Image (cartoon, rainbow, N blue to C red):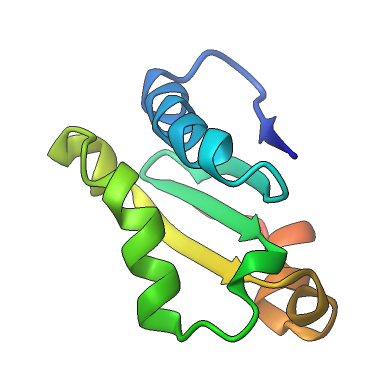
Length: 107
């Protein structure tokens, strides 16, 4: 589908993460990928993909970490949330609701 970054200012780490996720996006065009910086040390990612239906959490993570593990360790360390949901699961996920309307960070 597309990658939807929520960017307020230039952010090289978030840009690197989004670039890596571009590889996943090309292989999974029906996926909806969103990412934003929660605070100075935290990046949040949500991938809604109908292809996750019937896959375990471990299988979903294997697919996504295959591209994220190509990032420098410093960028990987800033990923604090990785939600891997089907579109239906996202409708009922409290973590997905919090992703959409995050509690403000004090950092």
